[in-house]
Length: 352
Length: 85
Image 1: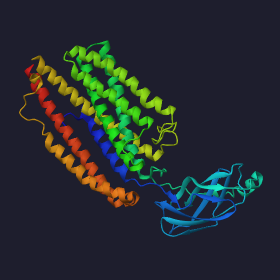
Image 2: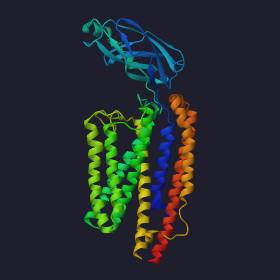
Image 3: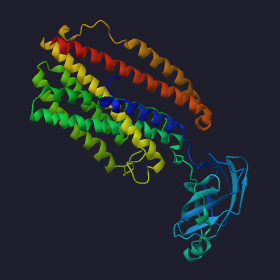
Image 4: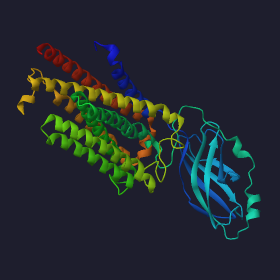
């Protein structure tokens, strides 16, 4: 690289990409609960469950367990016996009454020890009760305060999310691709609008280059999502709102590419593709961001809410997620810049 | 349409790079099978994950190298065409 001052961001892009791969794959997950061997139980029973943990050391450290209905109603297990590092047997006495009028109540399971920290499996056990007495239930499930002493593991590890498990790492690759694509599309939109206001061929070439790289990222996003779906849902595609709307948005952008190829006159092509790309961008926002939020969806982070921020993204995830978006965007801009420079040379050759 | 083709002596050797990526995909696909059998055990053995990290890091370095090569070729083209003009 002869000119480092104007090209430093390209090397930064590569470094951020490498960082997101090394840390995104290398950082281990926190302690979590994989499964429990029983789903249901009745009130007024001695419950013995076998719990399988992940990244746990049950045989090395004294482990406690709780069944929690909500923040003020939980019971601690009587005995926890570790069968191996990742298998523990917990005994609970389920009181005869629950603090609820419903005949079936779900309880979350919490496992904790001082080395691994705590792990939660939401709605782990469904408890049936036949004799409903809410006030007695309230007193039987009142907190002993022991839950306040659970341990928080302070090591740099990614959160253990149910269903996702290790595939939470997909956040840094699959999700980053879509975010980078969106940033590139905005940049391309800026140039499309610039071209319509002042028909300089540079604006058109830049808009096209950025759109082309964004479409490549979109295709990669669909492929990576498809691979994940095969392992998680057992199928490469499913009739899901977000998936289908995203596919439609990608088809609209494919039509943009075909549109550019079909027009010979340079000025007409530039003007038409600028107008079309503005429409395509608006369509993408409506299809990918608006419609999936109106309905339920299987896609992680959906079911009404986005996975953009809030509880879905942990601070540890953010530390690799944001650099990977920036890295992918910088690489995308680099590829677009190369396309643009090549197009400029082709234009010059054609003129001569 | 042939006017648009650039008459340059060295054409980018796309095929070699492509073969390397295809080879890498074949190498990685071996991991996909083990993932199906017992996905959690495989991913839990973090020793193996380091080999995946090295492979993907190699892919990224290969991509970077390819982009830098493209960069220098285009720079060369720009120089000849700016001088020609």
